[in-house]
Length: 67
Image (cartoon, rainbow, N blue to C red):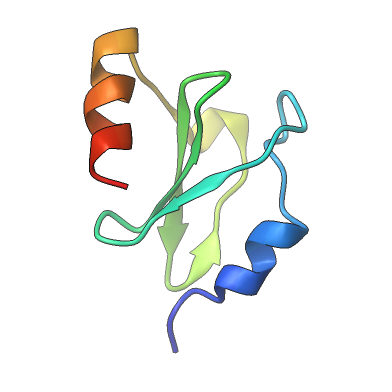
């Protein structure tokens, strides 16, 4: 079972409450406002700030090009 993209309508970044983008190839959810990347493990989004990866502006730009 794959990640259900309908969840994107109700999921939000736990830090800023902003919209998340789905990066299918990397199995990640991206908050471009906070430059955070949340993992999806076993098709379950892990929306914990402590589990998120902080990206630099340049890294975020590169990642968003592949979404």
